[in-house]
Amino acid sequence: MQLLWDGVTGAVQRLVHGDPLILSAAWRSLWISVMAVCLAAISGMPIGSLLAQKRFIGRSAMLILIRAGMSVPTVLIGLLCYAMLSRRGPLGGLDLLYTPWGIIAGEILLAWPIIVTWTHGAISSLDPRAAETAITLGAGPVRRWRTCLSEARLAIALALLTAFARCFTELGIAMMVGGNIKYRTRTLTTATALETARGEFDRGVAMSLILLFIAVIVTLLIAWLGRQEREA
Amino acid sequence: MLVNGAAMGSRVALVVTALISTAIAVTQGCTGNADKTRVLRVATTTSTRDSGLLDELLPLFETAYRCRVDVIAIGTGAALKLGEEGDVDVVLVHARQAEDAFMEASHGIRHEEFMYNDFVLLGPKDDPAGIRDVAPVEAMKTIAEKNHRFVSRGDDSGTHKREMRLWAMTGGRPAWDDYVESGQGMGPTLIMADELQSYVLADMGTYLKFQDKVNLEPLAAAAELLRNPYAAIVVNPRKHPQINATLAHEFVDFLICDETQRLIAGYQIAGRQLFHASRHNDTD
Image (cartoon, rainbow over all chains, first blue to last red; front, side):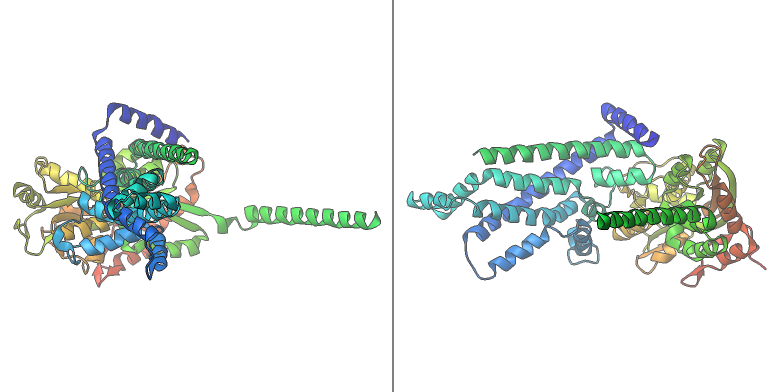
């Protein structure tokens, strides 16, 4: 118990004084996850909507596969990315291994199935009259899609937040693809793993507190959005 | 009523029997077979675990002393911390200065060096810095002066501490862009050094395990400076009453006895001797 208590008091001191290692890891975690979610959303949202609105052969098989993709463990994604990006791998020439962009590539794979599945769910559950009204008003396909997205915006915001929370708190990809290099690819999760392994518990606790804090904010946002949606 | 009473009676009997048999089982577990449930907790470095030597030695100890050994493999810094907190009975580490500080603070009551191996300064086969067969301190200095890539453990492990000592001997490590800290164990750090084709300080054991997987080779000359002694420390039971001091002493005695020392000297990976016994004359 003493250990945990010392950890918490030491952690608070570090946070108050702005430990550069912790701040840089927190900032890196944040921009990497935001970037990964944005990039995954660019293709994930249209594909999710397409799966909800168009009927074609193999559609349900695709949905099942993508849904299954949500439960792929992050260490497996990390392993695959490592194998692809390694000097001996097919994409070794891109020099992405041990860079933040390598982590982003891996986290896109993590976020993408979540965004596709949830966008699909959000758009399928829309009142079909919205799309019909848009058609009668003479809206083109792009315009119709934007109407649908705006109708489902709360559900889609939920999807993006969930994907963000998953990326922000994952360890496997950041460790295996990023390599936990100090001031370059060290994120909150890899740094926490390291500081615990080297016996610097207070720094580990400080970073866990930041992780927890952001996770709580995201959860509260999700809960709040969920209530907004129910009221709407 | 009668039927009910009988049913009740048999249920009570059942509960009583269950209680009694549990009590017997518990007391037997505590007294009769105490030796079997003895547990020794050992904190050690990842390099020791990765070498596979403990897998060879521990079963012998467990059988001979009828106990179980739980091994926690982490960096030297964290292993000593676990000892300090009384979470383990024995610490097996390799960082002399940290060990001395640990003993001075009387966190440990017995310190025995039981084996050693060597560190190696590895680099790409084409050796861009030209340090082949150069003395270690000179070699590190050259790498820094030519700003070549160097991957450091950066995790307070025994290997990292030795790297820091070598840098201190060069007159301090200059900061350059291609000096990166992996903050990971020896294996992942070697893989990273291989991917980045950089120089790296590694322990011989891990290097031998990885030599088929990485495109790096030992470059700097072997030297006394790169010797890497391993010590076993019994954690102070006066500070932490839960420490199993008897078993801990037995374990350290086991590590330095002639038979075990012979096994350590005879342990090989890929046909190469990995450790030298500290107490055993290699010549006999």
